Image (tube, rainbow, N blue to C red; front, top):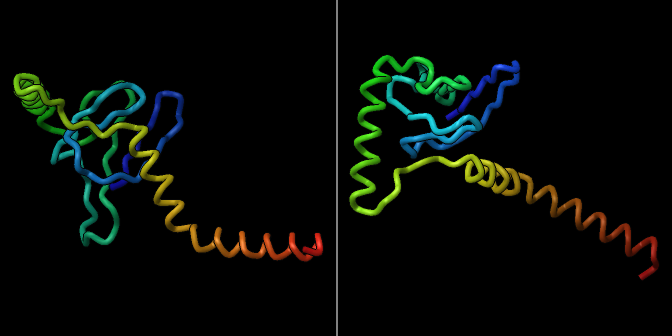
Length: 127
């Protein structure tokens, strides 16, 4: 899923994420993820998109924002009663997942570049 976060300054932050948490943490706070705020491609060939504007609680397209917020507050209250925390997709966790994904995709190329670098180094030093 593509998570799009346009700011007031005109900068747009785009992240790739898995839609598993009920809440998304962004630089301005936590936003609820609702079913009606995730936009799908008509043929399901492109990834889903969710647009969260800065300083707006509900994502773009969330028509039942007040009901969703009441439900989320109730979920937080129930979770606190059983000493659990609500599920939140943290920014640092998404960034760490993106780094590991990039390393996983780039590892064969980095390995080949490393072998070439070691061979050139050993040739130049005569070792």
